[in-house]
Amino acid sequence: MHFQVLAGLVLRHVLLYSRNAIRLIELVFWPAVDLLVWGFLTLFLKENTTGSFPHFITFLIGAMIFWDVLFRAQQGLAISFLEDVWTRNLLNVFVAPVRPVDYVVATALVGMLRVGVTLVVLTILAWVAYAFRLWEFHLMLLPFFANLLLFGWSLGIVSVSLILRWGQAAESLGWAVPFLVQPVSAVFYPVSVLPGWLQPVALALPSTHVFEGMRAVLAGQSSVWGEMAAATGLNVICLALAAWLFAVTLRGARKRGLLVKIATQ
Amino acid sequence: MVLEVSGLRKTFGETVAVEDLSFGVRRGEILGLLGVNGAGKTTAMNMILGLTEPTSGSVRAFGMAMPGNRTAILRRCNFCSAYAPLPSNLLVWQNLLVFSLIYGVRRRRARTTALMELFEIAHLKDRVTGQLSSGEATRVNLCKSLLNSPELLMLDEPTASLDPDIADKVRKTLRRVQREEGVAMLYTSHNMRDIEEVCDRVIFIHHGRVVAEGTPAEVVENSEHASLEEMFIELARSGGGG
Image 1 (cartoon, rainbow over the protein chains, first blue to last red):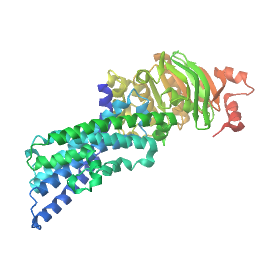
Image 2: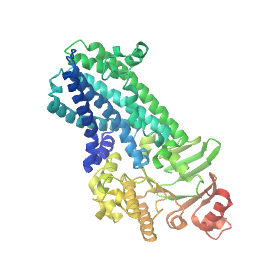
Image 3: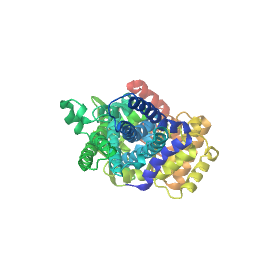
């Protein structure tokens, strides 16, 4: 890994955000809207339901914030790649001494920065609007947070691979891929809600274990090591599979001349 | 030789884009790659740069094989194309800073300033790249392509869309860089004036094959045409144009 190459690739995106304040709005607008809508809905349900919802609002707001971590991490890779496609800069990057791994790591770092900005804004908003203090919860949330970043990167690499293979026609996948796993990731509800045949699929995803673990932590349970180990193990497999897919797709793109086609279309 | 291309072949399905292409570029030499649209020039350049994988044949630069030593080779090369602009949403100095980091340039500020002065665009450093005229954008792109003091520079139609005055300045500057820094260049163009004025040697490609090779004067002399331009037009009209 060459530090200067990484610095150049990351700086290209940071400068883009620093030059254009409207781009920062994109980082916070939708997450903030989601948080407000779901948060107020939860408050309404809590006030108008006679049943017991001891951790309802906590679960939903926690899930909202955590989902955004996953989504922003994936977007960091997918949108950074698309940004190079849109500005026809891909050719300049791929004829430079940039290894594919440098490119992926740099876009992952951009994803981390995006996650950081969104997380700070959502945490403050949740505190102001719902007195939800993310920082008061157990430090145990941090490894789950890290696991979400890793899974977001895997999904980002998959998105980039699909765009590399199918070109700009597959651009919408840059946004859609995380939502393919959302219904089975038990983001807003436990795995037990899913039909029996779908549960093994859900449990094969690291994100499911993260959200199950997050709910356990927020409910005050401390025995979440099993979920954490499962999430980490599955993440290693997912990252390896995503890297393999990217390598195969890039090789195919070079063979078929697709890399040049995408870069100059 | 800084670049050796041997038996290069590329097919896309049934279409043969490049067929048995072999040539070399010597240190400090400017080699022109000529041909009508679809002749295989850009495909050949893409294979040399490692963007496209050859069906067969080999590319070696600085004695190293591509794509095995891709990063090491590309560190000593650079590229400028009329069809690969720098990110339009960054300022000129920001683009040059980003690419000087990517190419590991030392004394970045001094190198960037010197190149901008060489191409007479120092006054554009705070402008948004996407708002430059095509002549200005091309010169910024050329600055980028010389940031790492490359030993081999690949230029894909660098004067396309330039007015005659700017095109002339660009040609003269490239010649100056070649003389002063000893840069070898692989140069594709549709502009025969470019080729005659800039290139030491040319290779004429047609249907992916080399049909003529030598200095621009030799190529004309060995053909039955009065000029490179006439030769080009006849090849284009004989069914190779795209």
